[in-house]
Length: 286
Image (cartoon, rainbow, N blue to C red; front, side, top):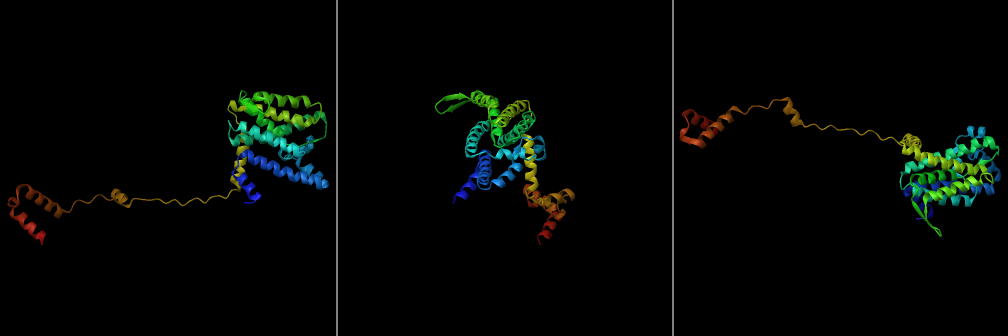
């Protein structure tokens, strides 16, 4: 088995986390190549797949609210996000389903993008946004909101409660907002707030991830080949049908007389028969 077949097998048998990592890496690496060797093409692609902070630009290209989350600035940005994605998804999937995880991931990315665009109406930074950090923060904060007292063992630190990790990451984004990459950190905060909101609504009976699940299920059914309706055979019991429609025939009169005579013989012997009965048996026996 070559390496390509091995990747195909891992993707096919992997869970939703592994599939999302494959998608992130599979989209980001070609993006890096184009950026390095075809800068002019990169500039064209950037306007169509990255999320621009301009409200009008984002509004006319709504797909960028999702595509930006599968692109990354550089290799280290991609590597760090994939490590945190793997970590946070394992925590979330301890309590919830893969469909809920995927729904939260996409909705977290969209909400983080909306925060990025709306806040830029005041900041006027005229920048672009790439990276899955907002979606990943939504997943991590959701897990921490649902089970804040869960303990995680960190290298060189020891056991740490999950809410401590979530709080530190949130505060780091918060204090870095006025320093650098303002739009990116605001997007992280937006993803975090969505993760918190998702769990609170879920605890009240509203599962926002069903929005994504219903849409994805619809498109899967739309493009999946429809199975022909199997021909249903109806089995009828002919004997039973005949019995219900046709009354059961009475026993043959001759046979009935024979039975009565034989019964009389068994009780009283042959000599008890009348002359007519003896003649009847004689005729039947011929």
